Every structure is written in structure tokens, then in C-alpha cells.
Length: 296
Image (cartoon, rainbow, N blue to C red; front, side):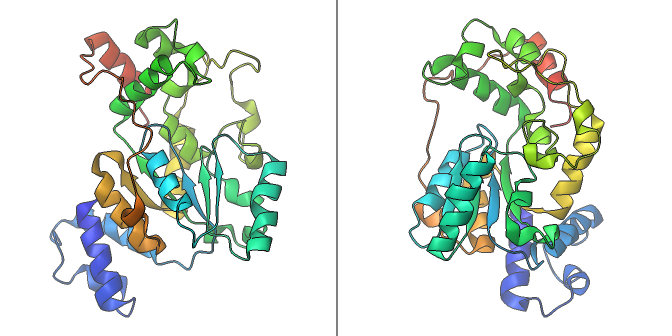
């Protein structure tokens, strides 16, 4: 991330797209002798310099500092944001976002816990979906999932506390949807809850959790097709990816390329202060976490 940030900044500030990316990558840049790093940066530069349209989409993955980022944007009076804690409905998208954006005469960000593909609901992308720009924050899968479990376990007012309060970590990992490759799932958009992704091949054939009061997925598993589609979306539309472990650097990254002062106004939000500081996981817990989050 640090290498990518340095290279991006050098290219955008000093060359302003006047130098072909291929030529630029062979100039005197950090680690230019590393072919693999250069290839990855080439892909990201080609994506990030595309002429995207607004609104931009912040895909908020649970326990990745997303609340900090979304509130930093919402506190900026110069931009118009739509924020959803849950999958938005057709009605809420139209009235909270599209119609209000017409009144505000600007439409900068759509943010929240939604799956990739929500740009299909915004008319400006009807003619060219490739103009949709997403950014998101990832986190080490093991610490993210454990943090998610303790968040639900400790916060009695949380709607998903019911699924953690009578389960230990192993039981929760094996039975509850939030433990299963959620970063891959959200990036792929392959969820039946993502009503706007009906066009995804074979999505209706997926085994999924039963509807009702129990949000459990004992028979559901994220597989390679999910991963392949997540990677495809990452290469084509998810232009910026930060890391929760490097939050300040990630915010600088976002601020520079979205031309928003996220880094100037952010405060750390939604910290689970009551969770254990050291998890002291057993070998069984570690192996189960890895099994359930293989694709992440």
C-alpha cells in the first residue's frame, strides 16, 4: 500500500497523465526491479486514471473501520452522500439518493453495507457501467471475523446479538453467515439479498439461508466462482482498496484520489472497547477460521 501510494502520487502530481504508464513504470520508482509489483501497480494505475463518473461507492465491510470513513465523508458539508446501514430498497434508493441528488444538484457518494453492483440502480451508469467507481477497506480475515463475533456478542443492542449470545466462537463460525468469506462475498455481489444483481449467472441456484428470524447459513459456502467474480470486480471497478491495519495511509490514499478531505476530518469511530485485547485463540478456532475464510 505504501509503495502504491508513493508511485500513484508521483505519477499524478509530477506527470499528470502526460507520460504513458508503461514508460513511467520503468523510470526511477521504488522497487522498479520487482516485476510482480510493477505489474500490479500498472493494473491499478490504469484503473485509477479512468474517467469515472460520480457518485462513487464506498463498500463498507464490517469491522474494517468503515464507520470512521463514512462519518468523515458525511461530516463534509461540501459533498452529498447517501448512507445505508443495510441493503437499500428500490424506494429508499430513489427517495434518499436519486431524487434528493436532483434537488441538491450534486451526487458524490453512496456508502454502506451493500454488495457490489448497486451502481446498476443509479441511472447515470445505465449507458456505461464501467464508469462506476468503488472503494473499500479490507482487513486480515482472522482478526476481522473474531472482531465481528465479539461485536455481536458484547453489544446487546445490536440486532445480531441474538446469533452470538448463546454460541461460542466455533459454533458461531459454523452456523452464522458473518463468519463465511464476507469480503469475497460482498466484492462478488453474489447474494440473493442483492436484488439488483439478478443478472449474475446461476445466482438463483445458490443454496442460501432460509428466510425468517434465524439468519443462519449451515449449508451455505462461498466457493471459487464467488472468488473469481470478486477478483473481476476488483480489477474492473474497485479502484481503491485500503487496509484497516494501515488506516492513516489508507485515508490519505482515499483523500488524494477522490479529492475529498477524509484524512483531515476523520475520528476513529465504532471501536469495540469491551472486546478482549488478546484473543488467545485455540488451534481448533484458528483452523476453523482459516477454513471458513479461505477465499478472503
